[in-house]
Image (cartoon, rainbow, N blue to C red; front, side, top):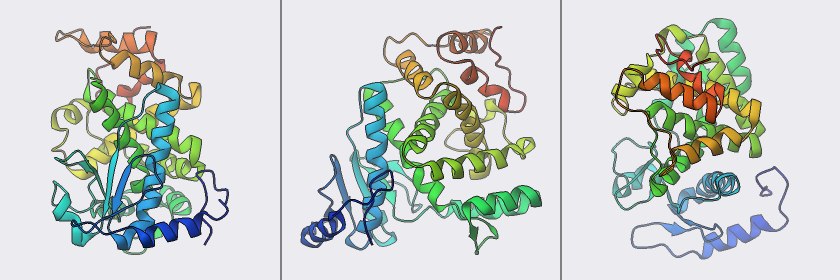
Length: 311
């Protein structure tokens, strides 16, 4: 099978080169092999190195995008694992949950986390027949759940995590959690838009389907208060609401709002919200004036959203 670049064009001879390099890569004492053809450290279990290469290409695309748009990219150390090796390297027991472990490695499963199966099954039960049928046309059917096959969307989230790694390394501090998650989702949307139009369509279709379940989406205040502890379904619905918001900004102005948001929240960037009753209103006004009005309107996608930008 020919190996393609990020835009789908065959790369002559690359498949043979990758196979030869993988065959010669020594297995370390931790059971992992290095994938030396990337500009950052990538290691994987030998049995999943092809999957690891595909995930690493996605990570590389995100790094290249950030370098082009923001002038900086994170120092990534990527580890891709199967079930058998997960607990030896991951800091969370749930297989497939992408995270940075205590050694500073971005740990990814070679298969999606089990939670994605639950999301697919829940969507099959909750969506109206027309919306579900449209989603299945784009994603394909997961025969285990009767819902959409979400594996490719799950894999595309590597760009979201790369964005968080960059912000942590550069000391970027967002005045609200939702704004930091919107930034990471913006990076994912833009990277897909630049490198994987079919992936962007998959993500967009999922976000649009979730809009029909707005009555089940948690209020933004709950998302802020329970971030990291919220159940999977409300968390996914909240993230998809954020994704709909950044889609609008990307469609209107491509990467410009993302760069403005990054610079505004970087050290000494000036975008902060003080602890007074007008803080959220002021944050919305600053976003509308200095970043993009569509980002300021994101809280309106949530139930009982109190934040509205000044006219």
